[in-house]
Image (cartoon, rainbow, N blue to C red):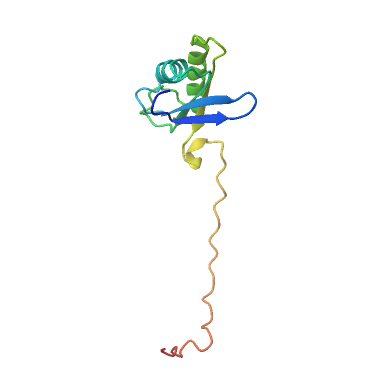
Length: 137
């Protein structure tokens, strides 16, 4: 097993399962190729593992190396790539995209809360004994 993994999940039991998770930020130059080169070839095949997840953290900026205009487009690219992989010996790889944009930027379908109307309040009455000074300790 390689020295450095992003995430390794060991599930003990009668039939133990190990899942390797490779995480890439969308602007990482290796994002379009590391599902095969890193996750499959290095971590699964060389590490004698069978299950992996490729997780793309999607920030939606113009530096995205996969180039989709939405998380769904990048997911479609990654799923096509996964389908083209030569998986053997019971190997299973899943592709996922996590939308990491700020909530307000995620979708134009997110409704903004209505603008609160400003209510002009009358000045509050002075507090009782406001002119008294506090006793010094």
